[in-house]
Length: 280
Image (tube, rainbow, N blue to C red):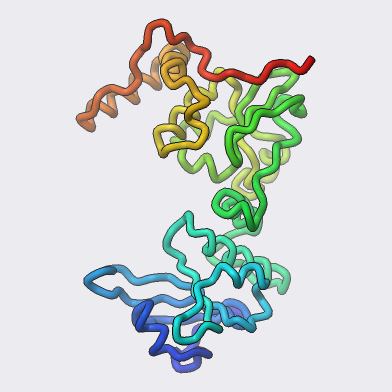
């Protein structure tokens, strides 16, 4: 089920909807009582159209929990609206997953080439209260973890017998890494066999390598775990172990007319993280 509808056949008052969200350009029914709608821009505040999902309160294709994330239309509270504009909009991933789950259960193709595995992984990043947080990995490329230290949802240190402490990053977290850094990650056998873009599993970095993904994550946005990393020692570790990376990174800073960021800090050392002590 996914077919274009004449706008006149939408089961709600379109004029009231358009007052808030702009003129409807097209509409498709993607599940019973769920519609994908594209709207026109509303100058001067918005110069691009919007992609919206509209769910009728009586739709059998969405759970009551998912319906709670929708925004009721002011003039018709039985019409629930979900924006599809901001990656970190919780409602977006909740309704995307519910639509794809319904379509999968009814042997229909999923929307936009998504997979349920990716819907869940991205949902766990953005909306853990609905999807649950990322579980601690139960295996690594170097054997099962002996202990773990959680930095954040989807960011773990894992102690292994063969490789010591390694960094594990959930699939969506790696979106903020350079492609070259992602390629250096180690994968579990299952993810190698099936393709990590299909399984959406964890990527792993030995401690010696982990300074680079940690640095890139810290540079991307303020991380809740940033205070647990000794940034000066982290930069020293990159300069000591990955001088080519440091040189290229600093050159990019200079070309962007910014100070070279990777500078050595005397006496900071290269131990950038304090792991938990061994249990007695």
